[in-house]
Amino acid sequence: MRILLIEDDRALCTALLPALQAAGYTVDTCHDSADGKALLCGGAYDVCVLDRMLPGLDGLSLLRAARAKGCTTPVLMLTALSGINDRVDGLDAGADDYLGKPFDTRELLARLRALTRRPGTTAESAIRCGDVTLDAAQLTLSGPKAAAALTKREADLLEVLLRTPGQLQTRAVLLARVWGPLAEVDSGCLLFLWDNGAALHFAGTTGSADARNAVEPLLEEGLSPLLDTSLHDSSGAVQRQSAVFTLNEYRCHAALLPRGTAGSYLLVAALQDMGFVHRHAVQTVVQYGAIWFTGTLLLAIISWRLTGKALAPTALAMRRQKEFIATAGHELRSPLAVVKASLDAACRTPVTERATLLRNAEQETDRMARLVEDLLVLANGDLDALPAHLHPIAPDNLCLEVYDAFFPLAQQRQHPLSLTLPEDSVPSIEADPDRVKQLLAILLNNAFDHTPAGTPVELCLTYCGEKITLAVQDHGPGIPDAEKARVFDRFYSADPSRTDKHNFGLGLSVAKELARLHHADLTVTDTPGGGAKFAVTFAARIS
Figure 1: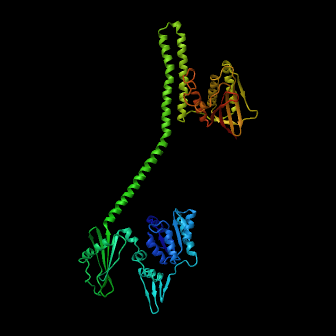
Figure 2: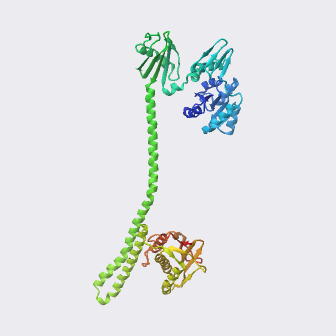
């Protein structure tokens, strides 16, 4: 089944040819409207795929002219103009179907199958003209008295002529339909034929006629000493010979082929334009170089982006580590300065007056010990090496123990401390009791330190669903919403001047690390009526 593909985009033609040929179609291509019109009007095709935007005569005008001449070949209009009005114009011009670009090759093949299924659209393989019948499929030509076998080329040539009786076929049309110009165009070759010394004028499709005419006498001159037509074999046939030589910018391959035993011969010469080869090689190198450069550039950009994303957490961790070390060193300087000054003064003070100075040094030493202990907890937490002994514990009993331990301190700090427990039994949690007590101690001390004397502090235990929550809430000034996200940062203090020397800003960071150790979630919210509520939520251990 034959298809005529009229499309000026050679790359698209090259892309479509394998799919069309794999579907069983014989495809002829044409890239301009003049030859396309002549081929379409020849009527030798089962379907025509026609591009609308052609150089010279556009596809619509070409189709109207073909229909006016009686061409009935089904036409599938293929174009990037796919609006409603464009499709209507195409169908009214004589198109049988309309497919917009871009398209799926499977849809194109399906539409072609649909067009060829219509009655009367398939070109018959047997063509009759007068008393002569050509069977293009069987490659036979028969008349009233005899039949002859044909070559494929002869059958193709006769098919074009018999399907258009009385019409003059141009040489370009015959070459496009029979010899296939793409072979010359794509290879940069010039083809020359001599039948028993008489030149068969093949205008070709590469280079101008003047260029071919200038090369032909030089070619004949170059062939004469290489191929000798006077040499015959024992049967009288011309000896088969071949030659390869260079002619100006061409590489010539020639062959002398015998035709029968009567001394007839066919001389074929194909001239390869080496400039074309070199240009094609340069283009190939440039194309692959551009692809390589683009690929390398894209790879570099992607690698840079991915590396940046991959290293961002490491860079952030290193920056935080540097800030952590710098802040820790700064925090240690103050108590060390107090200890050093107190000891220096004690050395120069009578023994009876040293008590105050030594007490100051002792207090600052205790502060440094607490700071070092907190730093060790955070460092071990960063290394996932914080020791813990997890086992099932009863959270209500743990809350009672913490309440009993902190009740005297709460009275001393003048904070009414209360404990709220659920009435029903509470499931156990998987935890280290000492670490949980340490966590609650941090939250209770934080409440005592940041609320005025006399304000109550509450320790609460709640159980909802599969979650158990231990909470410490106060009724002090609370924490502004803008500060809530930062209260767990290391060395964070709401007071930038750090007038409160009792705290280093590590307590809540340690509490957060202890909660993470238990796979628990530590959050801060507002207490109804004012204040802050710190809640740590554990997963209930349900047997």
